[in-house]
Amino acid sequence: MTFVCGPRMRNSLATRAALLEAAVRRFTRDGYDDVGMRDVAGDVGIDAALVVRYFGSKEQLFEAALDACFDGDDLWEGDRATFGARIAEQLVDRGQDAEKLHGLLIILRSLGSAKAMDVIQTSCMRDFIAPLTTWLGGDDAPVRARLLAGFIMGMSISREITSAGALSDEHCRQLRDRLGWTLQALVDGAPS
Image (cartoon, rainbow, N blue to C red; front, side, top):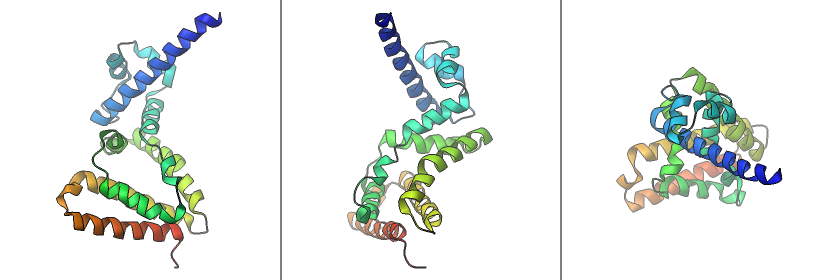
């Protein structure tokens, strides 16, 4: 009996992973409203009922796709005193990494959907804003977390739209230094 369950488990894990990968590709390209469960299943070559079996609903599949794109844990790793510089370097110097862009594209292409926005807001609060607020600490942590999130998301979008290559090396250095200082001041809780 154990022998039979082993291969099935591996196949089910592989199927779930393939469905999730197909969902990320579809949501990245088409946004929430233009993707159906049958589309995702068809990309993997299986019946749509299996998508429901593994993910439950389209909203749950969308949430899993978002979660697969974002790994906020790397934000909290490292010395707190260098947070601003580390994030500024990622935002200014990191080249266009297609996989890092998936989550942002999913969000941008799904903004017009009320159902998607519910998932996006819940996921963002649970997986980014709440942990960031806790990590920051202090009475004004919710305010600083929102400001940090706004800077990080805004700079991510700006980088993709305007391309950091449009700036000289010196201007990139200035942008990185000023952004790093601003982010670090929010982490440190600049006096009010």
